[in-house]
Length: 460
Image (cartoon, rainbow, N blue to C red; front, side, top):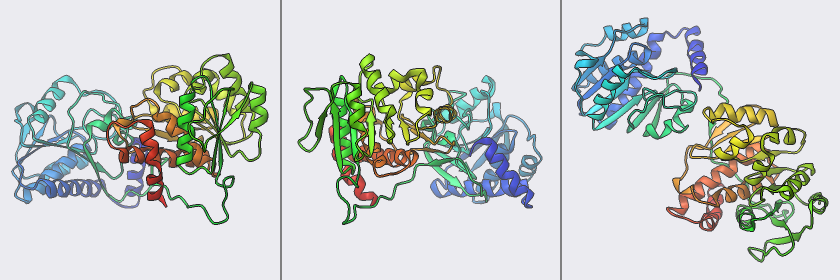
């Protein structure tokens, strides 16, 4: 949940008769039990801020103290909320001024949690850094201090943590870079929050095997439009084939060589010829962009594909060619449309710095009426209506040329089965990430493609 959603969800509980003190006790004791289970005997310093995150810290410290842990509290100020003041009144251990505290083997960060919007001042942050650097084990409560909760921004260049304990619900920052890399292991504490959110973690898909009645066309014919750089289109076609499409065709200029005997080549002479051939009723989904090129001919091919009323995936060069006209070009389509930009391609569609990935992706999805999959170590998939999913498992080895072409083919194979653009993008992203994990380190795009049948098997 975002900070505002979390605040409203907590208020709903309070309106039902649950006090702030009760919520704080649930959160603090739940976090303390998690800390105790992992590092029961480790001397601990709990850094408590003046807000309710600091109040959680006093609850944690008292619970650990009662378990016999050597625990101290450091605080820059007295609590400023009634609930935090109450929690401090129940604390029976020693409290040190922030400037006088010394590092302990375990550091528990309760300085600031959800809702921080500006950087921590240098005085406090200097002491914070000293105490965290001197610890062998660092645990953040709700969020590491210095992290902005809704967008995953690092307001301060803080340390990394071994574990982050989310209270009540996970926040976007728990899964968005650059904040995610600071978190370590993520765990959650249930405090009774029950509310809907437009943001979810990408689930493993459930995929049905072909029935006895299925044939190559019913399983989906994927049309891949090739351009100037033919290797990218070949990777996309092979990925579509290995991830379940019943039939794959590459539509290419004369002289194109098939990457595999089972991939059919359809020769096209110009954009008009392409348009006529793409209206074939047997085609279930179209991919254009990988290796398309960025010249006038590429724009002509793109316009031809956009006019065909079939599910369409736009990637790579197609996005660069469309540029700032992308939303206008796509908005008029009635068929499902997916765009899969990386950060650089996204900047071509919406010029400017990409600071708020979730909000910016939602804005573009709303303007264009199509599903946006923003690729990266924290890939986000956004529905035009605003619902969003994020991939929480990825491989850094995907930072390899050609893996984006593979993703386009996987998603197209799911789109060709009749899924909505959003669902196809979600399923395709999960399969792509899982295949990368199975491929191990230093794989090629071809090696990634070879892992796709195994990823499908896990989803049947």
